[in-house]
Image 1 (cartoon, rainbow, N blue to C red):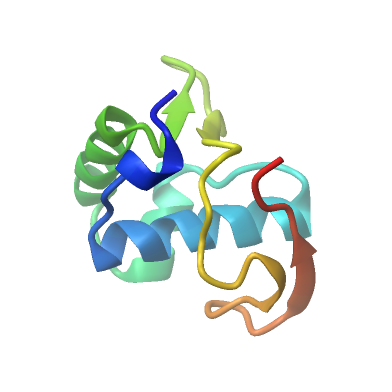
Image 2 (cartoon, helix red, strand yellow):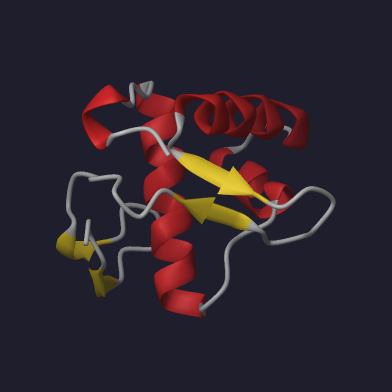
Length: 99
């Protein structure tokens, strides 16, 4: 995967990564495109476009034709790594940062 310092994300892509990490930390599985779309008030096609660009940048990977298969790059450092309050659901939880 791409080194973390080489990954450039837009503010929206960063928020999607934070949401995916929050969702997975709280529920134990990653969200679908539909769940991400509902959270951000956009279409699944819009989410697919963002996720595709994030994959190309090395921020995440996912299994083809498999639901809930978004995997964030384990070396990706997001604002709030450590202990954070999810900006989406407002719950406080521990999150994994780079290993």
